[in-house]
Image 1 (cartoon, rainbow, N blue to C red):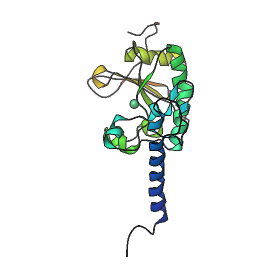
Image 2 (cartoon, rainbow, N blue to C red):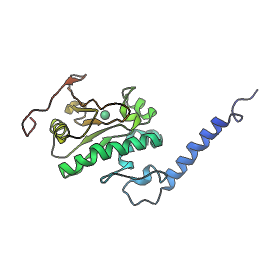
Image 3 (cartoon, rainbow, N blue to C red):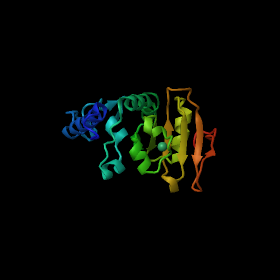
Image 4 (cartoon, rainbow, N blue to C red):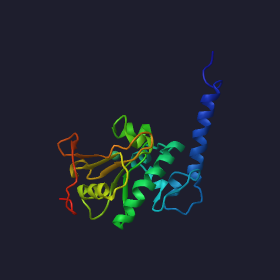
Amino acid sequence: MSRGGGNPAVLFGFLGVGFITLLAVAGGGSPARGAATVGGIVKSKLGQFFTLAELARSSVAERLGIDNTPPPVAQANLERLVLRVLDPLRAAVGRPVSVTSGYRSAVVNQAIDGSPTSQHMSGEAVDIKVDGLTAVQLAAVIVRLGVPFDQVIWYAPERGGHVHVSYTETRANRRQTLHAPASGGYVAWTPPASARAA
Ligand SMILES: [Zn+2]
């Protein structure tokens, strides 16, 4: 008995992936910078300052030839993250917020050895940097901004020097603040009370 061909779910899934890839290559005609990277089937602009492309770009996916286009649920989560956290942050700091890692498909997450429960896979987390701010300063800005967040983690330079920030609507946001030290793992961290972080 032959396998494949007779399974409509498999066939549909295959055609679906091909279709999305085709659209991604064709681009969507959006003028947004980098929008063609993830195609025009999706809303390219999220909020005021960010594009879906910059929240879904992955050098690992590009290198491995993996389609890292977020599915609709992840796109909706990314948009909420932008509206609730990233747009207010961008407005507050008054300069570009660089996304060093946003959405990760399960394959991409595995390729970079990410946590199997990473919120990056659901579009609920991003890693960011801002020129002129250290990771601890940026983390403190986010916490003091009063925006809702699930986790803010600032990483030691040896571990990337970025800030991981997440937001969810599947449960209450924890407002957990952590530091990822050079020695590994995570430790509790609270931003200093002064206007400027150490
Ligand atoms: Zn992260």
